Image (cartoon, rainbow, N blue to C red):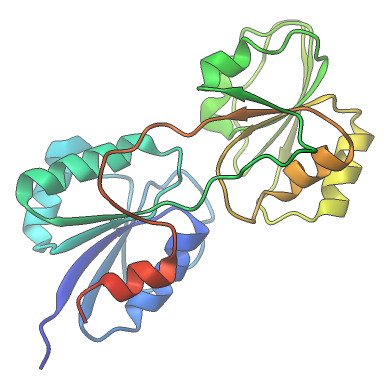
Length: 246
């Protein structure tokens, strides 16, 4: 009988769901999938699932030791930098195999009107001249824009957050991708949006808004991804899966 590899899969993305499905089918893998627990209706997952985080580096270290984890696969969101750095550091200290799945970032075309910002704070400083803003950075990032006055904000996120910038009008849309280009074009036109703010998340689920902005010649304030540790990183799920011990 082949040896069984105990894998902790850090989830929270569509790719993590695909990895969960693929790894759950392997008889040589004991799979535990972790979710942060911030979304009330996460995608269905197979096997053992833990939610709510680990309580920092010390908590994760204890978990890995107790569960005798051989490999950690981090398939968290490209902007979930804290868990990636924590998991990488703990795995390095314990000598545990750590692998990161990083979906490719979006790249601008010659028709795109991108304004690139290094982080949320820098993005919030680039709003002069724009009045009607479609804000699609997720509810946990709204605080960076809380001080912005005299704007209209259309905010879309999976979960509704608290956001009340002074002397501004805010409308919330609670929705989860994927979205169609036709729907996104209609949304931008109906609300007379003159700036789209987005994180460079990559992937197909939410790219339609970038395509729609391009077609309507609307600028996109694109927020760069945070830095990641220098680790084994994969941009292909198939390559990642075949790299694991059989």
